[in-house]
Image (cartoon, rainbow, N blue to C red; front, side, top):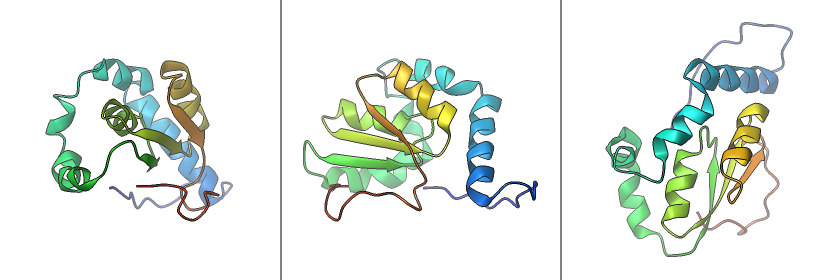
Length: 129
């Protein structure tokens, strides 16, 4: 959905470490994952007003039911929670270790993994969407 083009400011960090640090700091700077999670509170009316929804709603209508969906770069897990509420099984992957740890704590019934979406080890045809 979104790609941020930001020059690495620390030559001591490799690209993956820089991206992890950037996104960890981003969520901290915006109140933390907890704030976003509590905003959800099982309600998605505000979520359906987001710009991403306008883009995704057509694709979501074409999905079948009870699919295994990968949310690469899941961030605060909003799409994971929404798609789970629609009956799908969702795996949220994010590069930020602290973010994933917090998501696992807040949403223990959902699957969140630490990973770099550029290098995931899912087999061919193992994910539906």
